[in-house]
Length: 334
Image 1 (tube, rainbow, N blue to C red):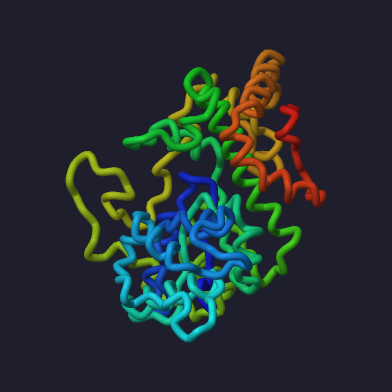
Image 2 (tube, rainbow, N blue to C red):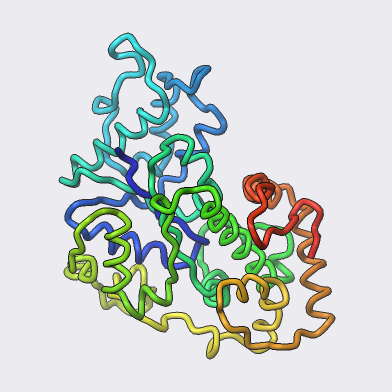
């Protein structure tokens, strides 16, 4: 059943690269960032009591860029009460994925939306047998990418309290929130539905990681996954790796050579415990007291930001189940 898989991870962790690799497989298509699936269900936009679809939902969908770029017309969508029976939201979204797969000539369809890493519970409730692939990258490299992130409008974490004066520490805590949100799922999902691996291993051993990923997805390995860029690579100056459609390229970000010693210490003071849990070696074995105090202060500042509270709410709810390494974000503890 579609959706077949969701590819998730902290933004700037390499999920677009992974999406392009999986999408190159002849048996599965991967939609690029829907954003609306759990949000509409949670807010009940266009849904009747019981989670059934109404005509208002269809009208709302055509106002969303994440839907309109799928290229599906209003006429192709199932009618909310076309056969006299209301359609549950999950079945309606499944039909959308099926339509997209038909256009792509593939039976299986997944989705890559990094922010869904904080929404795994609601997605699992909608589709109990959907698979999740959680890609994790060294947070210091993620931080470098976040700081260089160019967008027309501010997105988290740039819009959060603390970013303007403390971007590195804020990025570190944002990375921690997202990674912990995804890893919580390993505690309540069956192993057949959750696959976690590292960006560093993907770019250094792409064939091996793709083979393991295909085994998780119950698909035969196909080396076209490694050739996703063929016919698409662009050589214009100034393009970033994503827009240039580069092949798998290790070392595009390297915090060891591109991050100042002060920023490395700031990051490790804020999120060093998670680096330890993930076996990413620290560069600063003995953090200064003032760095640790500043990290605690920024954590408290974020806890007072309504936007942060909204992002962390589902994490805290899942964290109450007792997974290792939980932190209380609501009280701003360090």
